[in-house]
Structure formats: structure tokens, C-alpha cells
Length: 347
Image 1 (cartoon, rainbow, N blue to C red):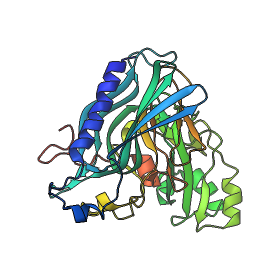
Image 2 (image 1 turned 30 degrees about the vertical axis):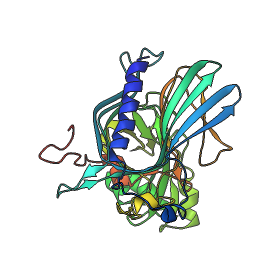
Image 3 (image 1 turned 180 degrees about the horizontal axis):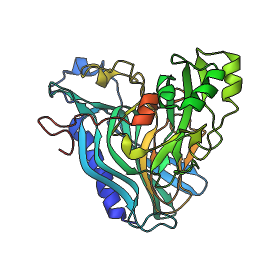
């Protein structure tokens, strides 16, 4: 494994965040003012243990608004059985956090309470991760391969499905009571091109074999529920309609709840929590199989990983932190500007 490259890439992310920490000018504080101030250290260290693995976590008590570009993010590039030679666990071209709007203004990626954590077995380090207690904003790039836990919710009206359907498929959907305005939902995850779960060096995202479309509203009520339940995804299809899609088609993905207002720069440092943020996002590197990381949102749970690099994008309040509609599922999402000036990506 190119562990040195992995370390460099993750440290680059950390330094980028430091550069974006909100600052205030230093000013002297009088003794009587100081007596009214309470707080905690900027850096706080904690220890933990899961089984025989010991952990040291360095909490950086800061709020961050950043716009970060990395030409190529490659973690865990080594020969792996069953995988394409030369591929990597995480391989993203023009990786970015945050965007730039049409007026050249930065639309930042928000982070609350980032941390670094190291895992040890005896005196040997077996893994490390950089994590965000809360994260929200646009993650961009061309995803070539991805390893980890990345649930996705596909939800929206059925119009794009019907537009893609042939006559027989429209007939079946019509019997189920599905119209253009019927709202449907499907859970997606990292899969192979044949619809099998694939958490290691995945190139596709979609419905796992056996999963069905869920009826949210509109249509024929319970009748729609019953009939849709008869058609599970099989080999990346439901009645001939595609249910798996290339990760490289999704050039921009929003982490967290996009319809919840973002904080202003002046509000961010004082917020106890960022509304609509994903809680528990991290990127880790393991030097052996079976390293488990504590879920800081629910400390009773752990996220089990495999040898190599791993990305965890958790749920937000019980819902996947990445949500796309059916039009985006079928057609992908376009790149967003991440540069001030004429270039769109790859600053």
C-alpha cells in the first residue's frame, strides 16, 4: 500500500482546514473581563479501547468554512486480489470541498469539530483517520473508485422513470398506479455492475439485488405499495429499468441536508451544531483488516473497516446524507465551479 501517499493526502486535507479556520483579531482582556469567561482548550486529547485495539483521538475544537481543491486524491493504491491492477481504494480526480458561485464568491464546505485519531495494537499503529463531528456542503470530483460506507437515498417524482420506460414498462407501472407525480424512494449503496454489494473499490452505486422501490405519496396507495413490492432489483434492473449507475457520473454530491440554511461566517464559531449537517463523516487508512472505529454520534456502535483506505459518509437524522432525485440518478450530476476565474475544476 502507498501508505506514505495516503498520509500526505490526509495531512493536506487537515492543513487546508486549518487555513480556513475562522479567525478573530487578538486583543488584550482585562482581569475583570477574564473572570467572566469560561471555555475549553482548542485541542483536547482522548483515549478509547475497542477489544485489544487502543485509540488516541486529538479533537480540534474549531469551526471551519473551507473551499479546498486537490488535483487527485489517491489513497490505498496497491495490488489487491480481485481488483483491477493499478487501481486504488479511493481514487478521485479534481477532489473538492465547497464551491464558487457565479459571482466568484466561495460557497464553503462547513465542518464542526474535526479530529485526528490513531489506532494501536500494542506499540504498532494499525490505522488512523481524519473525521468531522459535523460536515455539510458540496463534495466534488470524478470518482473512479470508492471504498467504504456510502449510503445514498434516491427520492423524487416518477416522471423521469416513466420517461425512460418503454411501452411494457409503462404498462406495468400504470397497473401499479404510478403516474408522473407519484413520489418514489429507493435506497442505494456501493455495488458491482451486477447489483451485488461492493464496499471495496466500487465503481458503481445503485440498488442492491432484491431491493424494491418504495412508494412515498401519490399513486394508488396500498395497491401501489403491494405491486412495487413484487419487483425487486435484479442484475441492476427493475423490469428492465437501470438501477445501478457509474460513480464517475456524479461530479458533485451534497453532504447533509441541502434545503437547510447554512450559517453565516459570524454565526459559525458560536454554533453548538450546524443544522442539517452529516454527523460522523471520516476518511481512514488501516494497515490490517478488522480495525473498528467508534461512531461518535452513537458511541455504542462501531464502523468496521478493511485493510486500506475507507470513506464513511453517515446518515443525517436517520436518512442517508447524500440524496438525489431520479433524474440525477439516471443522468448524473454536473460539476460545480470550484475555481475563481475561467477554470471550472482542477485549480
